Length: 107
Image (cartoon, rainbow, N blue to C red; front, side, top):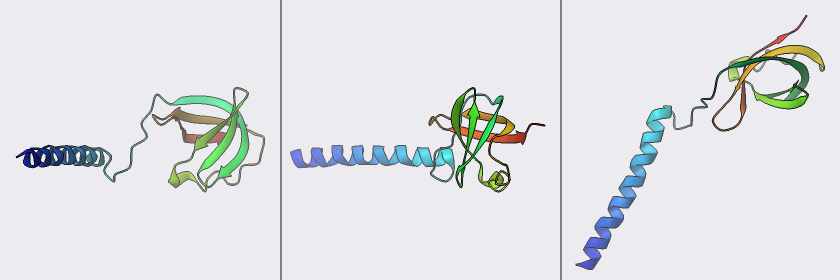
């Protein structure tokens, strides 16, 4: 009798955990967490360079800031020279990363 009760409780816990995972996947569509964040900020800074394929470094307010570049814009910023004055539009995502929406050269 005790084994049956323990089995039922274990099965309920196991299924409850699966339900949580399935719910998160439905929210994000593909199983990954969506990076939602605060409002978009627009600031001027100095383009430092590409940190890697999906990250640019920009000096904003005297601090080097790493901005995650959306996949569709990754080739757009490869030709910008270091120490170019730029205007960036970005926000801080829930996971703490900074997400770039747009980067333009200042003239």
